[in-house]
Length: 281
Image 1 (cartoon, rainbow, N blue to C red):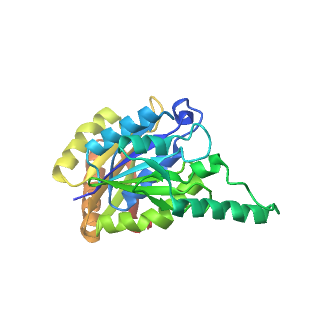
Image 2 (image 1 turned 60 degrees about the horizontal axis):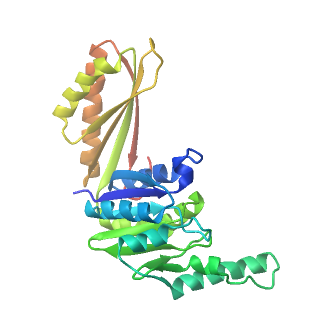
Image 3 (image 1 turned 180 degrees about the vertical axis):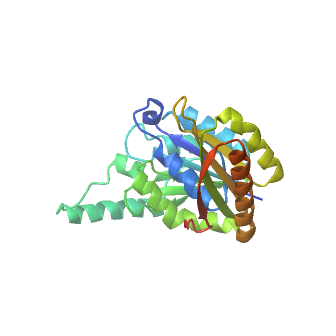
């Protein structure tokens, strides 16, 4: 049975349209490639009460994992850790491991810039002030550590919003945990591009094929302009047997192609399989 994951993206810049939420898209793809199921993505303001409310609501749905991104820096509006502490009824404290990580980063920066030293200001100490019970995760690229914290049966990973930092922490500290949780699950997907037939015409054909292949999910994505219908069909399944997964997708893809051609549509096939290591082949 697939493990469920929620993603909470934090930052005013996301909600005013200044910044495209590429973090959520990247995480969703990466998590799905491991055989886990992302059930919800939420964006929220840099506001302690809002962050706490969203996190409580997510925990109440009892996913296996929750990811947050953004709001871990030294500025006044980096409020994620305060919101998480409020949501979990936990106190914030300066964590020695996290403080060592922050000190090392500024020490390395001082050497690089030929400074004698960087003062450990309150704003910098803020990045090492985390909820009690949290485990700091090293940031290979930036300064602010990420954290992992367990609440009931839910593990919350709190990652920075800077995409290279978020990705590096995920790969170095989170990937192996999710891979273990997923076990032998494998995600397989295929694309079928269709032209000359409208989405309304193809809808009952999708229903028919999905009924014949209950483990395969098929989603249509219109691409063409009016009068020149073009649709991308995405087929996917998650199972513990890679051979069976491939067979299920191939069978559904073949059936779908046949019924579409019978409707005078044309198809072009493309298949991509992603295994628990996230590789594509």
